[in-house]
Amino acid sequence: MRTTEDLHTLTGAYALHALGEDERAAFRRHMKNCPPCVQEVAEFSATAARLGLAESDAPRPDSREQVLRRIAGVRQEPPRTVEPDRPRWTAALRARRASPWALTACVAAAAAFGGLAAWQQEQADQARTQAHRAQAHAEAITSVLAAPDARTTTARLAGGASATVVTSRSLNQGVFVSARMSPPPSGKVYQLWLDDHGTMRSAGLMDSDRTSQTVLLHGPVEKASALGMTVEPAGGSDRPTSAPIALMSLPA
Image (cartoon, rainbow, N blue to C red; front, side):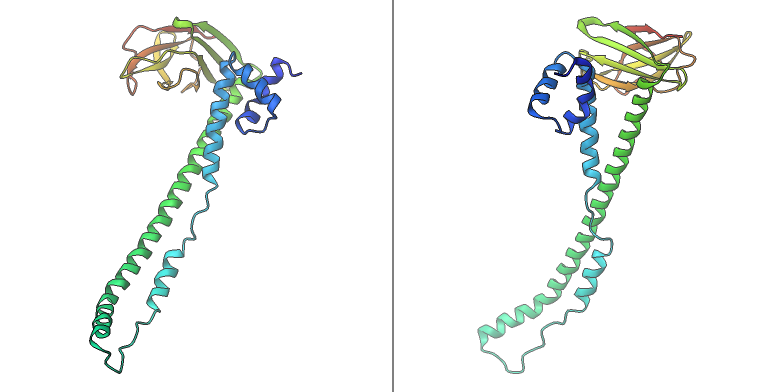
């Protein structure tokens, strides 16, 4: 029987569907009372999806040129030496008149295929870039949480929500973890602020569609004495425009 501490280590295996039925059921029960595991599973699942897209096979770069070369080498049907009867002559004339249009259609199809190949390549490149960014972001969060000098501050927020700040002075970085947050008002967003002994600077925006999330704080934490959260217009503000709904002292 796995302990609760052991279950915390199964987030990656659960997200990749690598658990047996008994472990999967036990981990599902565990997640009901463990918001950090819920958040971690969501992040692993999103990263795995991006990595899957990054492995898409793109068409060969020379596919378009090959199609165009083959079209140029196709000979048109020569004219008949014996005049056929009227109906067959009409059909042949229509076919000969249509041949330039058919060739144009083939060229257009080849061009479209080349455009599709370029679009697929662009999509694959974007997926790889997003996967790399997600991996770097996840590694930065993991580094802070696992740092030997990591310090934690936890607070209870309105409506039963909770917030935790983990900072590492050696890495000069911090991570904010929230659980059961109520959605902000329409057209608003939660914004985090680092308090440099009275000077507030933005530390990042929270995702308004998620009630539990992990945010890597923007900027160094070495001079910060506290972390605050305010409700700001969508897109964030240069400086706080409302009273903080949370203010947490950071460990020295």
